[in-house]
Figure: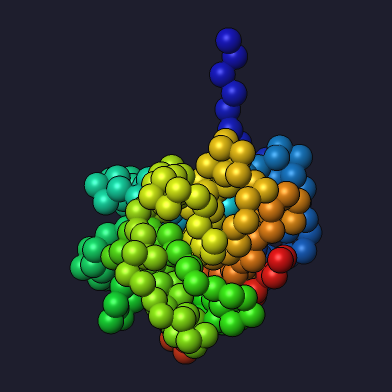
Length: 335
């Protein structure tokens, strides 16, 4: 089988009758700056197009200490919210000539550490991470080597930059409005890991919302698991078994949990039951469900754009005027 040979700057220089340095300057967009003649620039550029020349990214990175690659570490790529942000961030990176490398942790601390090590071996320029770790110690150390931005989740009292959705006030408003307008005598909260900031913030908003509506919270209304659909299914199933019926009002703190609840309702033919569903995170398919769901929608394009903006500033060693950002959420009422 014939082995294909990739054309190099040396080859283009020979074909154009110029030095390798001149060819390199032109192909890196510095021909005008270094006063290379228009005729020579046109000749070198024409040959490069003719032979479909592509610069060697590895050689380029050695010269300027950049890999033009970013790492994104998220718990679950099948989660609609994380997948949506990854999609938006990849577009921004692609338009800037940067490759986005995505790793998933499955909410496992050991897997997260391995994912970081793998990305570092690829010489990434920066890291965006939705961490399941208990503290920021590891990322504080890593931030001395490369820029690190926390996404979706942040650590208490951290000095690291982060971008997340404002959860407390938006959850408080949704819960207080529902509880005030309806004859609520029970309202259940299904949450993820208690150590994660989204769980803490959304639970705080839930509690404040009930308090604002003058509803006395009962401890048994708060149920925690993890942010996987299977956990939502199990928590909701156990709750239905304990009550002998579906709960009247329920708030799920993430879309994965709501997915599990909906699957349980469907499998047990409870879609038409008297249950008021609410949750954090929105999905366009909720508009097509046979059951209404009031939600808090995150602005995923805005989350991605802020992560990208902060990362570019850090890579270019620019000051961050706003390094810890809470993005406003929108309330979507369907009942």
